[in-house]
Image (cartoon, rainbow, N blue to C red; front, side):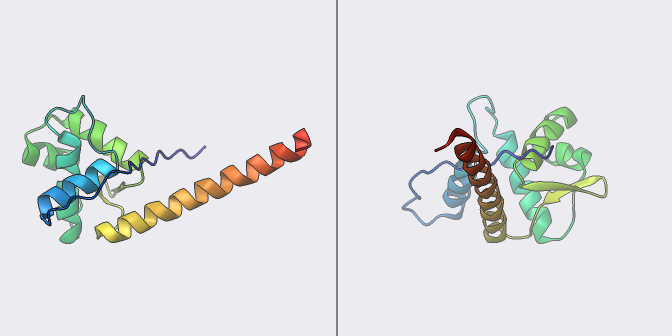
Length: 133
């Protein structure tokens, strides 16, 4: 069974036009921050993968760990979360963002959510028919 966890948090956009604040807002909206991730490892990995996507150069977990001064286990844990949410993919024993731009990433996630909602509606309709609703 294919499983994907898509998290979207609806929060106000930053007023100030600042690329760092906007990246943090986007990452927060995608659920990439949580209270347990004190050093923002997941966000930092996301940014490294974004940089590598711009140069079309996937990165290994060892490369990510070295660049970010994290353990390989921490990197793998967070990369798995990014893959589970459809943000990153495993490609030739390395990791890369699913697409090269943030706009494309959001568009792909939107398609994923639409497919998930269609599946929910189909099953809900079948259940309604069985229940005589």
